[in-house]
Each structure stands twice: as C-alpha cells, then as structure tokens.
Length: 78
Image 1: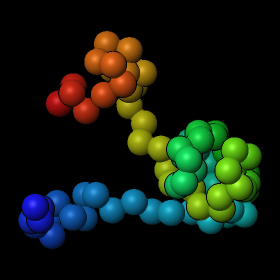
Image 2 (image 1 turned 120 degrees about the horizontal axis):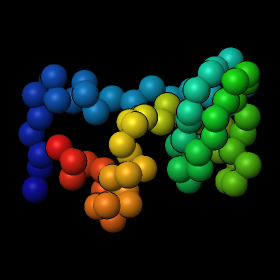
Image 3 (image 1 turned 180 degrees about the horizontal axis):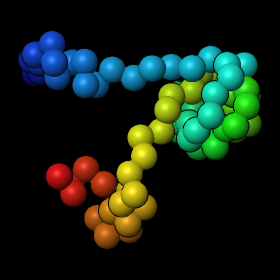
Image 4 (image 1 turned 90 degrees about the vertical axis):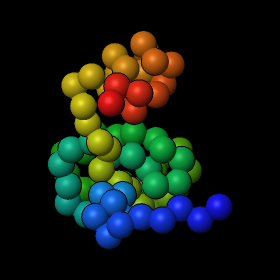
C-alpha cells in the first residue's frame, strides 16, 4: 500500500543529518544504530557502530516518562 502525503506532511518528516566532525551542541542519535550522545564540540564517529552520520534527537520533557508509562511509545501521548 502506498502512503500519500501532502508536501507539508513530507516536510515534517524531514530529518537533518550531521556528519562526524561537524561542530555541534546538543543531543544527537546515530543514524544507523540509534546510539545517543550529548555533544558540546565536534560530533565523533559513533562509538557503537562506527557510523559518521548523526541526527538531532527530538527532545521532550515528557519523553522518558512516556516511555515508562506507554512501554516505549511516547507518540501515544498525542
């Protein structure tokens, strides 16, 4: 089944990828394995899988609580 999206919906799903070595500050996830890292300088290679691509981690003050309450699905809050 093909999912049809409007341009606005497709734009909301867009994720920026950051290469290893980029100067960054914040919380990131490895694009391959999902390893999380808090970075205050240059993004490293992923220590778990060696990937060199990172994406910003979506942050919510309730994400950890939702994962506990809803069994790992913070999307169920909406």
